[in-house]
Image (cartoon, rainbow, N blue to C red; front, side, top):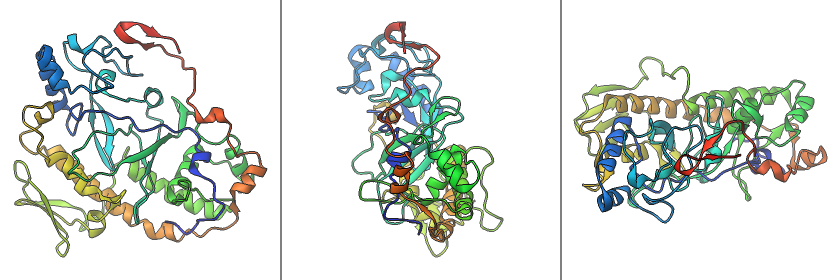
Length: 399
């Protein structure tokens, strides 16, 4: 936790008023670390008929093959009942299924118990999703993602970090209407002597947010020099967390490499702290700094959860069992990048701790300025959009 905490710091819930519970898949098979498996799973589903299709699908109270649902905003999946679906699936899209773990998802509303369409409506290249995390010693209270975070079901035997509320940076597509308390940007511009952007506010937020008794708190400052240092640090953190654009690299000698070829499918990772080596059966990756291996979110090691999502053997005969038979090279590349990101983020923690609060903008000051409390309307999604959305059985929904 940075040292910029203050007893009267405003709540994140007031500064970014609109929040949504994370999408809940309800079944594991529509998401996977590789897109090819998803297409093969869908093909197996639509080839099955009657009770066999229902058994493969995995019916819940929210979804069965006979559920009538609308199309996901911005996606091209069908809206006819799944019991009679045929043809290929909608093109898989990238989503975040766990901390620092981007996978693929079939974006079909018929497959998802609680899709949260309001989030899909604002998911585009301009968006940044703030994801609250379970408070845990040493772990970040917030993660930022460029792709939509979702919650797949996981076996109870697998430890996993569960995301909290999701707060999009923008309430409308195209980077329009920041999800910030009205008047906050103007007040910051007045106090700092320059106009910060919504992304600047998010950068400051990810650098300084800490736990509070009523939820995450965001200490604010009117000191221009402190704000500049905090936002510069926060933009670095955003770049590492969002993982879009140029890929981060460690300098030569510290860069992780595959030192011994990985087996067709590793069974269990083993970490050697003294050698800074990650053993995957006879395969070896090094150097893997202890800070990367020990990096936790919500009290769970990120790399252990990442591996569990790929090496846990699903029940035979299920759609989840349709997966690569050998370890794909792309997974190795993603692993090396994840090690790099966790290492670089851990190295920023001392800089976070050095941020010492000066000239705080307290909750009391924000109330006197009329910024807080935010209007109730800002806690709800934007109500009118400029494109039609397909309803059940091909009908169009009016917004």
